[in-house]
Amino acid sequence: MIEEHDLDLLLNDLFELYGYDFTNYARASLKRRVQRLCSLDKFPSFAELRYRLRSDETYLKHFVEELTVNVTEMFRDPGFYRVLRQEVIDNLRAKPFIRIWHAGCSTGEEVYSMAILLKEANLLHKSLLYATDLNPTVLEKARKGFFSLSEMKLNSENYIASGGVQDFSSYYTAHYGQVKFDESLSEKMIFSTHNLVSDSSFNEFDLILCRNVLIYFDKSLQERVLRLFYDSLAQLGFLALGTRETLRFSGVEPKFKQFSQEKIWRKVT
Amino acid sequence: MEKSNVSHSCKAVIIGGSAGSIEVLLKILPALPEPLTYTLIIVLHRKHTAESALADLLTSKSRLVIHEVEDKEPLLPGNIYLAPADYHLLIEHSLVFSLDASEKVNYSRPSLDVSFESAADVFGPSLVGILLSGANADGTLGLKAIKRAGGLIIAQKPETARVAYMPQQAIQEAGVDYVLDIFELARLLNLLNNQGD
Ligand SMILES: C[S@@+](CC[C@H](N)C(=O)[O-])C[C@H]1O[C@@H](n2cnc3c(N)ncnc32)[C@H](O)[C@@H]1O
Image (cartoon, rainbow over all chains, first blue to last red; front, side, top):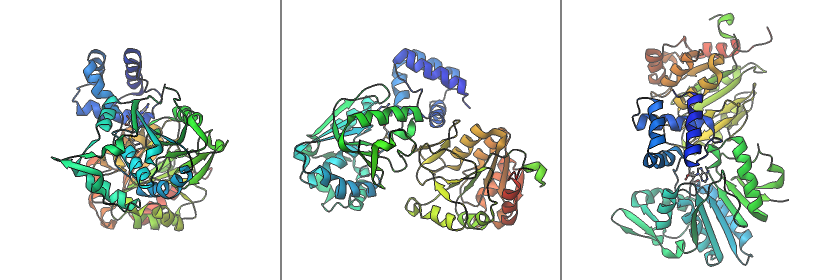
């Protein structure tokens, strides 16, 4: 069992030596992640984990990647994508140009899902999808656009449940257990590292998706990030969060109006 | 099981269950005292698709509203909270819930062990942990953590459980303080209420 005090020391090391600031991540979850890594990587004691982190930068990279949770899938929560498809996208149609930000995009499944929706709505040609994450390794994977063939069954089921009527496999070509999505989908994507803890706004968007990222932050960091989203949204722009994430406990709530029970809000002031 | 033993300073009760546990909850929730002086947290293994229908079903059997937890929701005494499907439910020292969609634990998300351990960390001796019917070994390690932190731990009497394995496991491995049938569980939840006496 890792003590609070030990965790503080470790977080302090990560910040002082490498500039990674996890101090405002949700403590209970972070502690579990550290404990999990300590036993997965077979450290006999917490002190040894700390020593390794202080002395081995390659291990640090692995540690940071494993500390954050990267699991994702295409059309995750199909009901959410159904609302995007049927209600949100129509609201964007009249714009000369559509800018979307996927904050915490992980390996890119969410971004490809969005590109498919936009393509089917005949809007992809005038859209740009900015996809950012803290972790360069997942971004590299997203940029390449290769996914495992074994995941396509679930992705395709999600796609259909979200209201998709095309043949899902027409969007990719399969090679030896891997699939590569059509270049026409990735043409409109821009991948870049961006740390929600420390980086600032970099554009104005019509829609921001930040799903299953805020749950790993404590309330003060959530507040910072939600401000950042507010500042980065156009008037009446949309903000989409994960299925159990909410603005209900945040100071920015009055500046937004809930658009759908599927955790979508609009900036109103 | 006398009132003096159990009501000392109960701030939170956490109930975990799997197969066969909803029918138990449907019996004990209607018998809850009102107002409730502690926070009641319910963590169940359940099908992803059943969704918030479960919260509605449990609410219909209780006079109290059951909140299906959203991230960073504050824990208030008197309220009943249900872990949402497909997230681990954790508790922060600042007395808000955190959700976590990381790997399954014991093939489960939410995992009872994860929530029990996190609740033990925050509530220490003021916590009561109850494990109901189920076919999984989840929950036993969590009960141990509650006990280590000074809390009280209880298993449903295996003979009264539709699936005896889970409470049986806890009885063998965790050294539970009480083994109770459904009627006694309901009585315990009443005894734990501090009616200002
Ligand atoms: C669970 S994934 C979410 C993926 C996708 N949005 C979804 O809902 O399926 C969480 C992502 O947030 C990223 N993340 C964590 N902390 C971050 C930070 N401070 N700044 C930017 N991204 C962060 C992680 O690297 C991870 O890829």
